[in-house]
Length: 118
Image 1: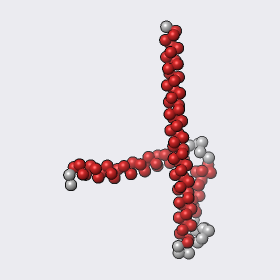
Image 2: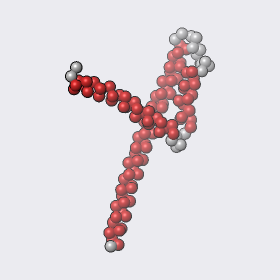
Image 3: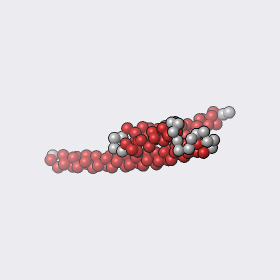
Image 4: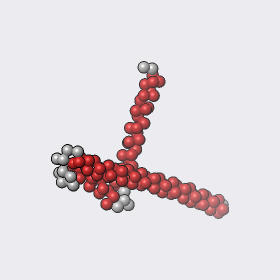
């Protein structure tokens, strides 16, 4: 295998890993943000508890249905969380861009005012 082929293979493997790492970073910021209501954070813990605890709507002893309700609860929680974390990350990015644009305008006003005094 040539060096270029190896580098391409490593890059193709690394890209999904980096994307998942960034999503985990977004999830960490989401869970640590005090502005996010507690019930939204509780959705994940509730779904994990539902899967792990032996108390279910359909007992796990029923071969297929017992696992499907766990899978459904987990899928619903992951879908909710993925959408909410993505929306939270986009809103945080928009706030950062807005704050940066406000900061630059403020600096321009200060510079203009200091030049007029001279």
